[in-house]
Image (cartoon, rainbow, N blue to C red; front, top):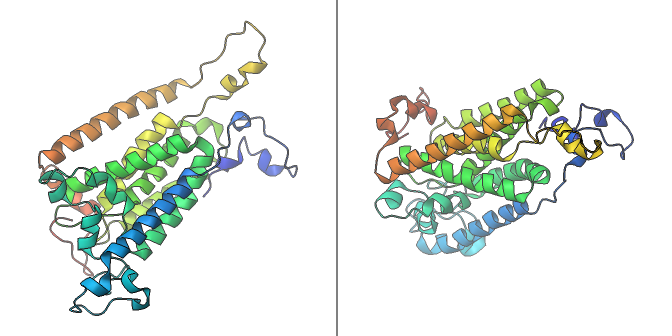
Length: 326
């Protein structure tokens, strides 16, 4: 991703030098380069949960053969459900529900709010898992190296939660699993980080266009049937707001204050527009999550307040139809 031009630092000076020890005189000179360990742990945790889910699923024992035999039976109890039931090579819907998949009835009527969090650690199949984990590695590790595990971990988890809340408001008759909402939160944070730190980057337009194309393509895939695009949108919006709150970079003059003579008045750590974005984003984030949670636990349906929102997750065509709740 065109991110360090973005990440190369400075005004492109470092990228044009052959001396590896050369450090561009820019904001990144004083920036801490973190070692990424949390994102790899997230990947391991997701894989471990999938293995446990498949162990509990035990297709050979529970499949009655009405929809065909288990896939890859040589794996024993770790074999996958029949392709007719789950083409993503994974467990059954009942197993996912048992493990904590998101479902409106369980969250609202059975007071199982914990599913808003547990669902982001579950995946519908090995294909689903691999796609999400590869995305997490490519996006998350670089962000963690720049901003540290606390900030990126918080953005990942809260974005996943936000995606689950928005999904529950609109999707009632199907279960939802996956880390997609959290991943879209990281994408949203990348976009707002670029905006709030706009003045310190070179090749801004190229970086912005590249990132927007990636986001649009991924959200565009969400309008296909059987894809929960509300989780994507909810996670993206939460991550986008969190990026303004948690990822602003100090301006260059503040970082260089140690070189100023004694008695010289120091600049503010952040620029005025960064403070404005911080305050506005914090208000919108708190208000948005609070309103969404109140609506959810009052049993309100999102489509009652936004009839056209069904086209955000599925657009009917001559090739496919959309279900009533998508």
